[in-house]
Length: 185
Image (cartoon, rainbow, N blue to C red; front, side, top):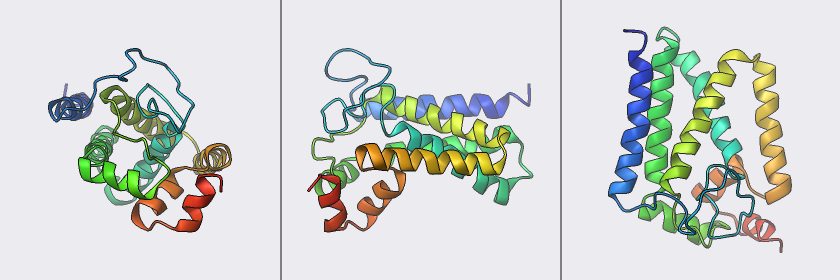
């Protein structure tokens, strides 16, 4: 039973994040009224509303990064507790990302002009993507994990002019030249 506790804690963290987002008024699913496995149109009101989208790879990369960081600083903890910590960090990020202040920041300095926050379904799926990345990083050789991360970033930058690195850059230190490039100008 004691080996299951961190996994139960992980599930509880996901449930609490979803409950909090519902409590503050975030949409449970897309306002369009249905659920898609994949939504690939970035500049649309349905982006970040369905199960997966072009930002799902960035959440898998979060899992890679959290596994690596926790392996470096907390490797004496069991895999399960490191997963619970990573899930708590990801859930906290999702809560912060869906706060009115951060949503307004995204809308003012990134290409996400029509962004009004993620659906709760998308948040849960993003956390699940991080968990998948965490499990992959635990099982793959480091070179494969790094190759996958670079491939995910290169693919999203090439196809949608966005990705984890650009998202962080534009959120923290917006550059007009990057915004113009992302907008296709």
